Image (cartoon, rainbow, N blue to C red; front, side, top):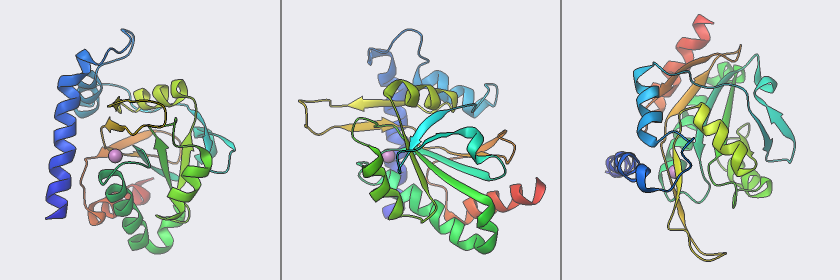
Length: 207
Ligand code: NI
């Protein structure tokens, strides 16, 4: 029941993103949600690329730091009420299932809410899911650039007074990046831990 409700939320958010994007007042140079998603789903757009962000211990990290590992990448935010925690738990369960093979895998969580998700906040959050999960944050510009490269859409929703509450609508695809930094593919929102483990296992075997 819970899974079904989460799935509905994800697709609702996605549909909302598609419709809301044109009126979200974004800069003209930024692709719309529809453009980002279409490029990802069709496989026609390049996905991934270099990034430089700050991890939960305050160290600068680039994509090159993770060469030699199969990267499982998810964009989200720590205040997300249920979708992000569910997806991160699925990734964690998948890695547990893989046992020793998971040592070849580096899970990454990139925040789409850098305003609130500071390194200390991320440190607390990622350690509650998986000991080796790395959380990444940065300037809004750097986060936006990385998200766009991965065809992830996000928009702050219900922005209020300073200190006020808001949510961040975002697409929730899980990305797999090869040991050489090459984008391998994505898994859709709501995918099961078994399916994540299966995909990782298949790529580990083929690399
Ligand atoms: Ni979320």
